[in-house]
Image 1 (cartoon, rainbow, N blue to C red):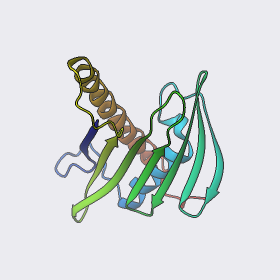
Image 2 (image 1 turned 120 degrees about the vertical axis):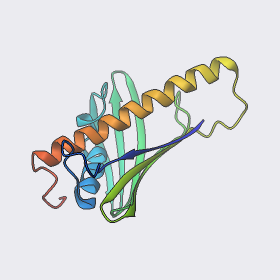
Image 3 (image 1 turned 30 degrees about the horizontal axis):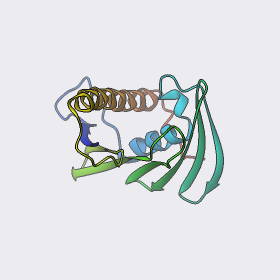
Image 4 (image 1 turned 90 degrees about the horizontal axis):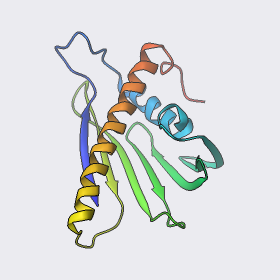
Length: 160
């Protein structure tokens, strides 16, 4: 299943939505990789097992389920999560890309790919529709948390 959607970040003309800078948005997306327990329900723990320039390797614990992944960063542009095949988890990817079609008009494009290109059954289609909605809600929650952290001033400092 491949699934892509956009979340608009700044809403010009809506005084109830505080605008974010590209740098604040970037720091929030990086923080989601560094401290995912702030963003993901059901995630019990995250251990960063390796760090290199532009890359993290992590071990995520969801109760008894352990997931290993790798996160790659293209500064101020893209965060790419890659989950390699591991029993019982199939390979998958998530990319979060900042788009700015006009100055200050920020969006994040979320792209999911589970590398299952075979024709889906009616039952799989039903579950994939549910997954798409769950992904969309989780992504909106990610942006909501980034907004909250920005309002608290936590995204104004350089990343360490």
